[in-house]
Length: 104
Image (cartoon, rainbow, N blue to C red; front, top):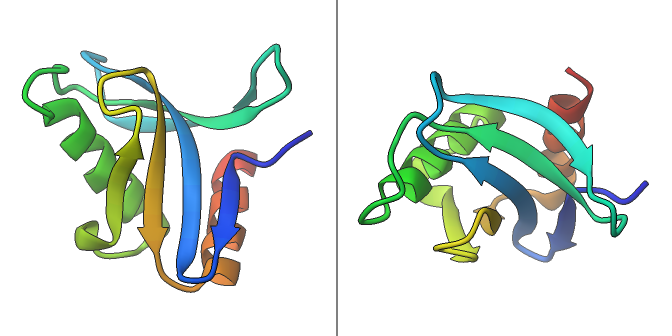
């Protein structure tokens, strides 16, 4: 099984499948797609207009990983369900935190 992130020198890139307009904001663990790639499943209440859902996702992931909201940004897939988030920080600690999210 692949991991839903890629380590970088200054942090990680996290692959996420976002569902907007959900009943509540939450992370739902790691899912593997039919092509073998893994991603973190997330739901946010925000609507996908004017970047509101992306901002909600950034805040949700930042809180879950214990990093400042400014350390998380959508770098790919801004208007798609599958997104790449860039998270700045210690890549080893971030990788460990993401793996814990997947096992919860």
